[in-house]
Amino acid sequence: MPVDAEDLPETAAFPAAPSPPPGLVTVGYFDERPGYAVHRPRGADSWLFTWTTAGRGRLRQGGAAAVAGPGDLVVLGPGVPHRYAADADAGRWAFWWVHCQARPSWGAWLRPFGTGDGLHAVSPVPPGLGARVAAAFRRMHADARWAGDPHPPEQGQEPEPGRVAVAHGWRARELVLGRVEEIVLLATATATAAATAGRRAGVDPRVRRVEALIAADPGAPHTVASLAAAVSLSPSRLAHLFAEQLGHTPMRALRDARLRHAARLLEATPLPVSRVAAASGFASPFHFSRLFRRRYGVPPGAYRDRPGGL
Image (cartoon, rainbow, N blue to C red; front, top):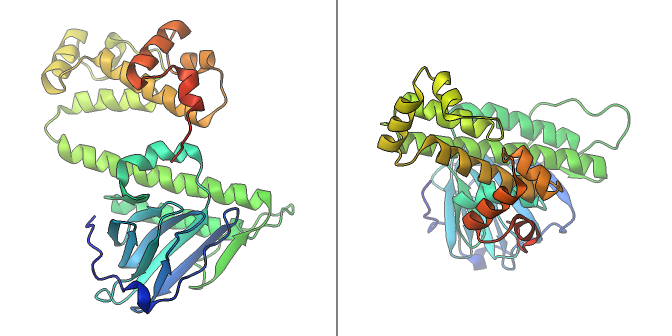
């Protein structure tokens, strides 16, 4: 995604827009023409997630900038001055947006797409994902209006542009946040996969298949023999291909995937360290803690308690 927003309108041309209160969860769909712009000189108190469906928008936060086209997810963190506008050359900017507080577990997904000053530009997202993300936003817009009665709203059609839904009750807020989490996960995971595939086009497809098997379930009782059998290779041949093409062994790939999985469990769940170790495929909690500290610089418990988040 290009990171050139020099055509954004100057601050003086647009009055400061209000920022939603930090605890409020709001979602809407806008279809704006050139001249539309929002400027917040103190930033927002909540996170802003935008998904462009048509046209083009330009966003700047602090010293970072992004140009968002169809299928681009751009996320602005709180507390940094920002402004965004419809691109004059595109003729329009149609986009979904959500203001909410981000869950800490989203940090690992968004971090690789950070461009500075709390701006995250997720691209390239495969074109086929657009329909699913749009459906999630429509569901989110309907769920935000649920008052907790026995009949949650059905997913509606794309709302009239400009209509904003506010999730007032805790049930509605949790449903909306669940949809945001789905969108962030889908967009970041597929963008990462697409970028990786482009960089590694020459890697043997059987090696890529083994990597996918490990990534899908790192806690499973994989062995070199079981992974090799899954791709119709001998263990020695699989080990040779890994060393030749990736520079490491299948078991190192498995160990690293298990440690990443454990880190995500520590970030997102209250499971005790012993259960995190077992769920990540480590038979010994002591061995797990030693490897985890070597990889992340702190023991598992300290990693979970560290300050920060996104």
